[in-house]
Image (spheres, one colour):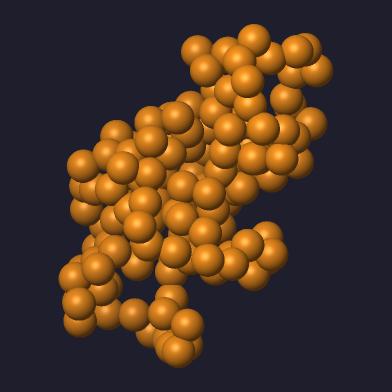
Amino acid sequence: MFRYPGLIESIAEKPQESRFTIDSEGYRDAGIFDLLIDLDPDDQQPFCFMSTNFDQTYPLVIWGLKAKLGQELFNVPQAQLYGVPLHVAFSWAYYHFILEDGKSLPKQTFTMRIDPQNITQLVLAHAVQTM
């Protein structure tokens, strides 16, 4: 879920579950700037993620997710992404919601080598150039 200008919330469900009610203990600090998490009371694993200023803190959130949750894989059927790390899912959200499907990307040549097919590299390059 994305709410303009920078609030993004993501809820991860286990593939075999479809929970309509979630016993939540509430959001707490994830140890990553501008990222809050909610833990599943059953296994204490994060299942909800929220960033309140994602349009401004994207690079910090992405590097934090990559460092702390880089091993877990998620499916984002709306994006046709399957088995991707959370930072890739958040990069997709940044590209499509903050940059409005890439329309906000500058048309200039990047001074760094990036793979134009890798959305994470593309939007991080944009974020670095605008800082």
